[in-house]
Image: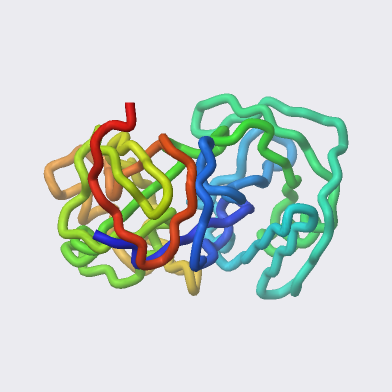
Length: 244
């Protein structure tokens, strides 16, 4: 097994950026989902499934400035500044405490989405992550689904492997070690083409038909970081004994 793709985004819901390498911190991939958008008028994190054109947004973070590009509004680079306002918001029925920021990105993204949004910074890593901080899909699972576009599943890693590793498995991923938690529940975002934002597949329906209830449709696996380290494209992914 080895890594064939690495991806993440600093802005939740935006298109994943393909990377040559990533550092896995104890809390997850460094630079992943640092910011999110809040629906103005309600304390809820914006959902990509309800706003599919978010996948047309690209974002980059250099440690100080956030650079966001949208198809119609161009590129905005600025350092988001805290307003001092901290809100407890709903993220898929979970509470997340988020710090509201001021920056020109809010106006840019509001224009792109056609609705007013606010930019917020994640205060605690993982607050707007559905499950484990690291996600993996395998080439075998993608092939069985007849899907060549692995970025559609927004995983941290694509792994060249026939089967998903079992829950509880420890994996050496480059210089890091992760522990597999279990399958990742999916929603209709997997049917959104990351290049066009069009709903152009019925993957969710297909996966749901594989003997599972529609309300719990898993594809890929998630994992927690056990030993921090760097992972690079082409690195081996190897089952290892428990570090403890």
